[in-house]
Length: 286
Ligand code: NDP
Figure (cartoon, helix red, strand yellow):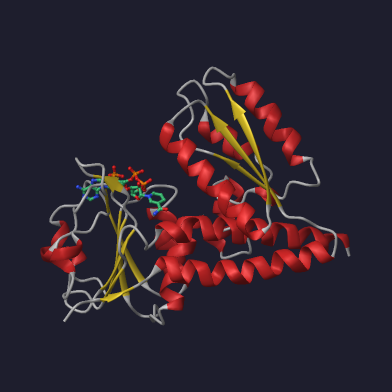
């Protein structure tokens, strides 16, 4: 029997519908949620990501402003832009598309974004609050995975979740969010010996590696929920995940496809955080 597909496109659309309703309510109160996106240089993948984010904003009535800076922009010029956006009342979310050119200190740039507008959830303040379980903007990809699990009715408490990958933007926060929902979490990474012996214990397996078809039959326990965060292009430029879908289909109880799984959720949660930020300003004004 095939595994049940967790359809991120459908779940994402359902969530976007409710976000669009919140945008309407905000507009009735005189507030249009605004997202500023800063793009440095001409990286084609980054350009595509930014275009998609802007289109998604437009589709649900969020105002988005693109600030394009040349590849050789100085770090200080970029910081000046961010500081000015921090002070603008019409901008509720600020996003700096990564990666940045090598001469710019990414950590410094992210730390300059006001925590009140850090809708990517990457700043040290947001990360710290997330670790403490305090209210903050959660990083969009792991937040999206949590929504996929929630909407699919998958119990997390008491389950063994194994996360493959420990990046700041996916793996690490993913494990934290699962821990907060009472999973027993194991992190694995490139130095983990005998990976399959660990992943095979997972009730919930999260693949965030960045290697096409890396997770295969030998890694998956029968009945496990498999979430594929990976976005890789194969030799024919076809999108593939980190999970060998064909090999794992039928072994996992649930699986996310690529495309159409985690991908659509990341932008959805960016929209969610931006609207949340706009709503927060109304509460502060009261
Ligand atoms: P990184 O390259 O930053 O991190 C990859 C992680 O995988 C590292 O922690 C690395 O370990 C680990 N890893 C590498 N090789 C192995 C191995 N052989 N065994 C076990 N672990 C290994 O990637 P990201 O976290 O940024 O992204 C992961 C994937 O998710 C990529 O395909 C990316 O494109 C995709 N992605 C998808 C998003 C979406 O919206 N769906 C959003 C963001 C990312 P170590 O730390 O030891 O080097």
